[in-house]
Length: 330
Image (cartoon, rainbow, N blue to C red):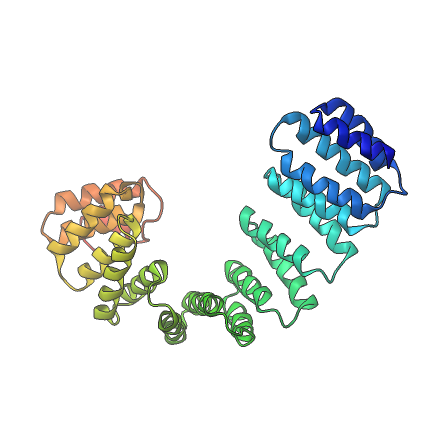
């Protein structure tokens, strides 16, 4: 404790070398509680972004704490916090997994793991961690949501929908979370080609919150591809653009719906907006623009844009045939 007092004294004097010297004595003493060391490290972690010296000293103290208290969950939670702060997500996940092994009933630890999985876009980790969450906390809807998302990304669309349907029944007084469930249920059924169920889920989400630009855009595009309820699709796509202007994908969606309605000149205007907002890097937008030019009797321009689409990602399976025959195919 005398060493801790000296460490604090030298810290106030901004003498990092002496601070580190006495703090290591404190952390190397197994009789000093892990809780006290954890509280000290909270401040260290917060300040570790200020310099490489503080970053290094903090990590060294974390390692000493883990050596002295290998069975204390706080030794690994603080390490996880440190690595997250420094965007070292693999190390952070390993630390929180070690913490979870010591405390399998910790909701915050599981939540941190899920946050890391989403940040790193690692679907297999998300599937694993959300499954653990379901086993430990079977009444917490958040784990159903993330497990459903992971299953959908794993192409298990019906199983995803089933998990999400079960999870939404556990939501109480949380409209935003319920919207998340309905959106993901809709996406799962859409991927499974259960279009009626998908549309019902999307409509329920919009009945709770009608101002969701990405949902409005996606749902309207799905309808346009199926050539169903195009009036409703156009209304939603236009609203998405009002809510979130100058987005190439949104402008493409609205233009494509107009194309499906046979309003080619207006569709061309919207596709040009999309191209001017970055859509010239999208195979699907370039192809759509070519389709519109073809319908406006500009075959040369259409083939030109189809060829440009071929150099990008996202074009349709019919693109090669369009280019070869210089003709639009659905």
